[in-house]
Image 1 (cartoon, rainbow, N blue to C red):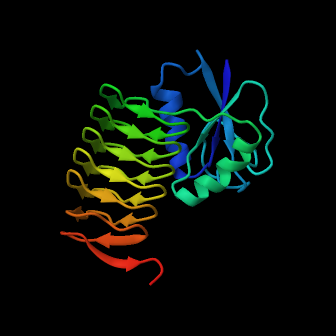
Image 2 (cartoon, one colour):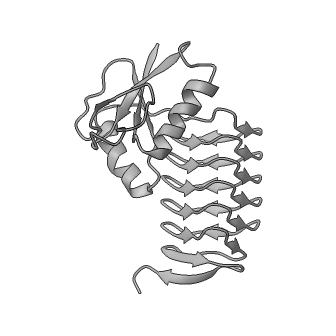
Length: 214
C-alpha cells in the first residue's frame, strides 16, 4: 500500500486531504494519507484534521512506498517545494476524485483537480497544474506546467493557459484565447483576446492593468 504525503498543510492542503480521504475509493485500499510535509510547524494548530505534519519538504528523504501530492496555490511556491522531492527521486501522483473527464484527457504528474471539474475531450493538463472545484474546461484546452486555475472558471474550446499562469475564480475565457506564461487573470474577468506573457488582466472585457518588465 502506498503512503501519501501532502506538501502544504494550509487551506488547499486540507481540502485535498478531505477529498482524498472522504471521497476516493482508493483510500485505505491502495494508499493512505500519512500526513503533511510543511516547514511551518504550527500551521495546523487549532485544526483537527486527523493526520500530523511529519516533516519539511526541503529536507525530507523519500522512503520506499512514498508518493507525494503538492497542494500549494502559488505556482512558484509549488515549484520550490516539489523540486527537492523530485531531485531525490520522489514520485507525485495526480488527484482527480469526483471530476468528470471526457475521452483522451491527459493528466500530468502531480496535477490536482478539485471536486466537479469537467474536462472535455482531448484536454491536456500538464505537470503540477491545479484546477479547483466546479471549473469547466472545453475540448482541446491546454493548461501548462504549475499553472493555477481557481474555482468556477469557464474555458471555451481550444483555450491555452501558459506555464505558471494564474486564473482567479469565476473568470471566463472565450474559445481559442491564449493566456501567456506567468500571466494573471483577475477574478470574474471576461477574457476576449490573448493575454501576453507576464501580463495581469482584469475586468469585462479584460484589459491589461500590469505588465511585468514595465
